[in-house]
Image (cartoon, rainbow over all chains, first blue to last red; front, side, top):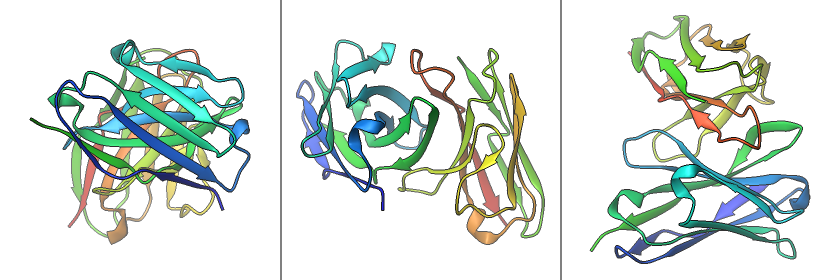
Amino acid sequence: QVQLVQSGAEVKKPGASMKVSCETSGYTFSDYYVHWLRQAPGQGLEWMGWINPASGGTFYGRKFRGRVTLTSDSSIGTAYLDLTDLRSDDTALYFCARDDWNHPFFDYWGQGTRVTVSS
Amino acid sequence: IQMTQSPSSLSAYVGDRVTITCRASQSIGTYLSWHQQKPGKAPKLLIYAASSLQSGVPSRFSGRGSGTDFTLTISSLQSEDSATYYCQQSYSHSSEYTFGQGTKLDIE
């Protein structure tokens, strides 16, 4: 069965960087885009960007450009989110989700990774 | 593309029929999905392509619309439908995906 399993919770200081992983299984990794989204406490869902594991191509939301890098390792079916220069308002639950070019709908999600940015 | 969802919250009873609306700031065809989220959990896809029911989702959930105006209807509320519902547009991989602000549904 399809699974996206994310790495564990992190606590970071302002100005630090974070790296969250999304380990996939149950499908061909290169056939689907992996998107990253986040949800601040008590807030709605915010899309951050995607990576196409087949090509390594990426597309980032304007708000995050310059601070976010998405990468993937097809040998282990894992996608990564790097976010630098963390601020307190980056405190959120971060999710990965998959879709594909012809069916651009998030049918499977990771369980979420809580990241807290605090001095 | 901005997504405007209403209402932001509503209360209803078991067995009621409820409808949530979502409006896009420009035409998105049927690149619209609806997700259900319970506290602390990942969202769950209910409806994709505006009106297609995701596998495993109860048939009391239905979606309609195209272009800029969309609705999600739950025909006969169950207690487990208490959750926050989000619409989301995915018009193009070359542009940002966006969500409505969410509708918190309480079952009384």
